[in-house]
Length: 345
Ligand code: SF4
Ligand code: SF4
Image 1: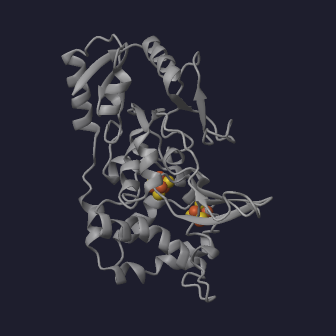
Image 2: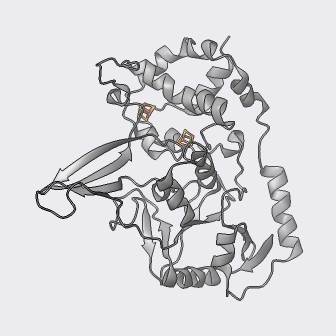
Image 3: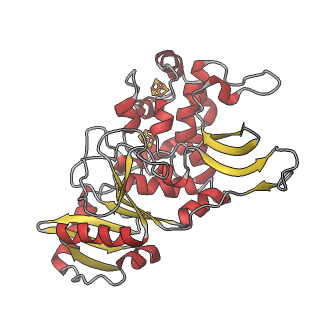
């Protein structure tokens, strides 16, 4: 793997170079509405001249919107009589320009790999993945709500990143992880990193990296019926107000619904984020709702992340970013849910 040395000034210059040919995005430090139609909330378009500032811990908004936009137009059509396109459904023209997302934390980079498991055959997700490069920054500091290392990740991880920057005493070293990373580095005149810097990062990775996940991993082998019938769900279901905030801010929640919108005879079929915390989510057309009660929905969210998803794909569907811990209005903490699940008799 190629590893280069980069100063802060060189990093700003790199972002400016990339923005001449690609769409470059950087996080904003507070949650705010989208600044333009092609920019996800919580991110801003970099068009030269602005330095990168990162907060400690995960970016306020996850990278999910770049792969799974909210909403995403799947096809368009017209209902106008006599229109030459009447009866045709067309895929909207989408930009093929590379989007470079700068400032991604290791937890979010892993979330894309996890979401790729259920979306392996989803052409929209895959097209977005193909045209997106992730430029990440490992975490020298974490928040009290961060627990990536318990979920199989690491604050110093580079998994899923095309370029991974790590702080050194006088700037950064950058690891080129993929072919997309090579494209971004092409033509840049940078010095190779020194051996001492590379081994310092390797030592941080080995001492502050992944935690021993053995205890949590026992959940994967647990009998579902025992976890499903645990008494803990009753009080958790009573506390949860089913606002859905945890699902929308979560980088690994990927449920969607599809609706048709017709305005003045022009229709579009859109996919938009849905939440298993909402009663309508599981309502059948027959009127039956298998998760009509709050407790059933709360249990489903946690068991999906910690049992159903790993049973099907292997890893947990949580990267330990802690956003849901920070934002839950009633202070439900997935780490406590995990401990309670481990204690179920
Ligand atoms: S954010 Fe908290 S209260 Fe809202 S749905 Fe999630 S767990 Fe329930
Ligand atoms: S469940 Fe919570 S901690 Fe885990 S990935 Fe989602 S938002 Fe982050």
